[in-house]
Length: 148
Image (cartoon, rainbow, N blue to C red):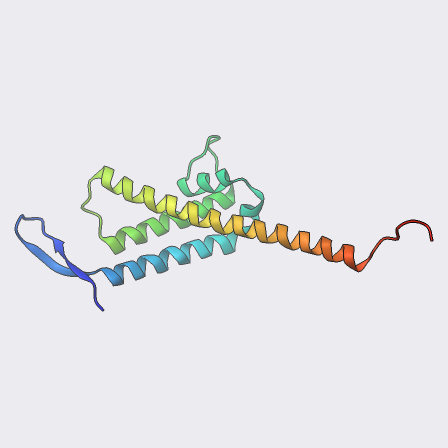
């Protein structure tokens, strides 16, 4: 099934060529997922030990102290590349400044929320595994109780 709609023309009353929305959403989803996966694969250890602000600062490219760590710079560069890819897929070069900012804001916030979701999921998995390991150790090596 092909979902399409006419692209708005720059002149009132005219319609442009049909736009394949399914192709656009599939491309965007794939590129965003690839960017998130790349960031998680490359920086999982840093993301697991730092607070969420570490990622927020990295994706936005600015922090309170002004300087980014090397890991944050790499995350920022990947986020910037992803924003450029999003711009190219959506062909938003004709948007006004505030419209472009709104779109980049949404993409950055999407990156942050998805990455933080996976980081927190990883932290929970680590805590569960540690707890299960301690419980298994307690059952495997019971300590003697009392004097017999």
